[in-house]
Amino acid sequence: NALGWTITDSERDLGTLAAWDYAPAGAEQVRIAFREELREVPVTDGAYLTAWWRLPCPQDDWPRPVAFRHAGVWIPVAPGLWAPGQGAVWRRAGGAGGGWG
Image (cartoon, rainbow, N blue to C red; front, side, top):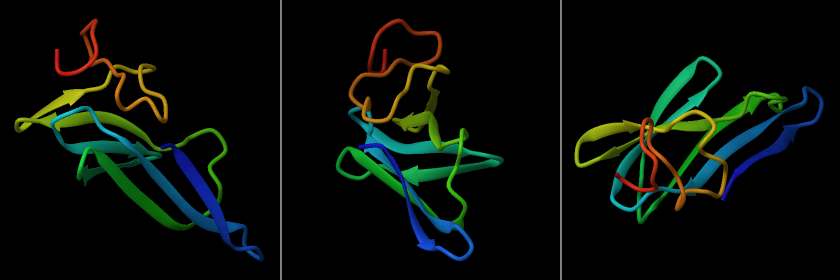
């Protein structure tokens, strides 16, 4: 449950980047921010997966969830409160507890 990059073109130092993790119970979708891109990814059976192809390995800027959709409402993830593998333990922006509040 985390992030991974695998080289697929050693001549150009390009590879495939994948982001996957568990989502909070009841989440329908997750918004993933990576560089200048924001993508919405479905949550299936409590987990999500998204990938990028043919890009150099990220140095400091890795994909991260910024919001989860629950019951049709997007709930932001407070900055710094999500780490890969922490899908079951998260806090929404402005909230003190884990889960939907």
